[in-house]
Image 1 (cartoon, rainbow, N blue to C red):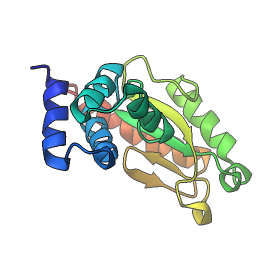
Image 2: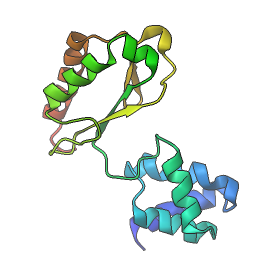
Image 3: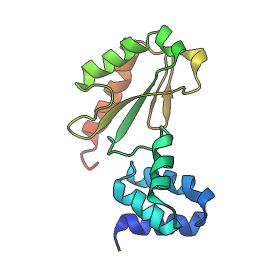
Length: 161
């Protein structure tokens, strides 16, 4: 059995196979696979006996359910008006300059993806970004360069990932 098919079957066994279990199953696949491939969405539809369009519609509605392959580290920069007013554009430029990618892209080595996202819930400490599950607030271009340097160093230390 394909590993993704097995993962989906296990998630369905764990959560159940009704329509209201779709979101936790989608989240479980993203947690393990880092994104929802067309194949995985089709398999979820088959396992839950749902139309593939319904699975795809749900998957693409939520911004944290990626449906294209992402890097090991997903950098999400808040794009709300508060973060924009507090310097979000300079933060994006600093990241783009350091990683040599634009928003919406992944580095060629597959380590970093840069995305802009809706509110992260830290408007009182804007601008904010999330790297995987780690939140960073009150950012400046200098602070961003320091943060990314630590992630680049981690990458260099662990060549097995």
